[in-house]
Image (cartoon, rainbow, N blue to C red; front, side):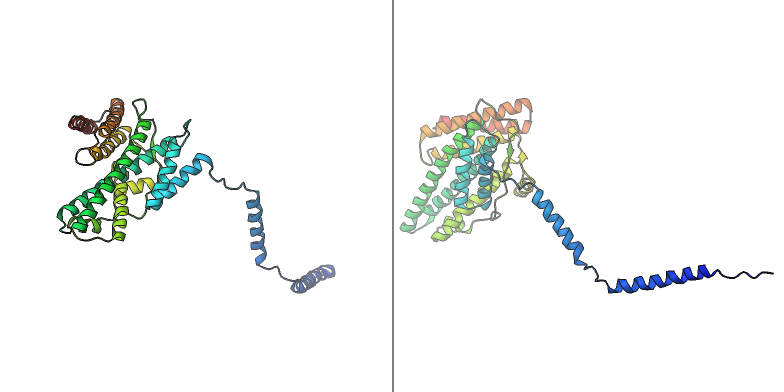
Length: 323
């Protein structure tokens, strides 16, 4: 009987492979290890190459840049920045031929000017009350002068509002697809203006407090104007504007314009500057805005808006008759 023996060649083969593995291991241990930073460096190089191949971000130019600058100045919420925004918006609104930013500029300009007019009316009222109750002749004279200054500033703004409203309602209607494209200005307006409350009681108010009171009055009035145009409250307006341009309801916007033009016209009535010629001029602009509102309602009737429009039209007629 033959005994099966292991083949010498198989044994040598296994022994050879084992020895090869030991040699390979020894050789590998002697090689330098690859740093873990290598993949990171490679990734960084890849990103750099891709970035160098990407087109550079385009900087706005022309009307786009001018409108962006106006928005930025409006957002700062300061006297000087409001004025810079208005100057830029006026230039954009007067563009001939009109461009993609003309109507947007006119809408924002109307809102800012309307707010500033309301602020001047508020200041004028506070100064008038202060002059009436104070027992100090010097303070009375100062309050009366401030009252007149506020009325004159508001009256000048009223003419600027009248111009932009005529531009917007040219042809008897408002342009289609209007939107309010603006940031919400900072800081948020205060609940009250302490300096004006003191003045109404005949108490002394320092120059710095008066300057701050004027700015606070603008913050409040512009925030209220934004809310009214968007048919909501301040928080609602802030939320909507943070999401981008807000489409406007033409009838609602026409009601806002009519009301604010008449507010500006009131600065020329007998209780203020007593200029019947300019009062009638402003009342005519308000009537044009009201007609644009009626045209908008003809295409999309709304009983509530129609009732408010009729009230404004009656106010215009009564004002013209009284002047």
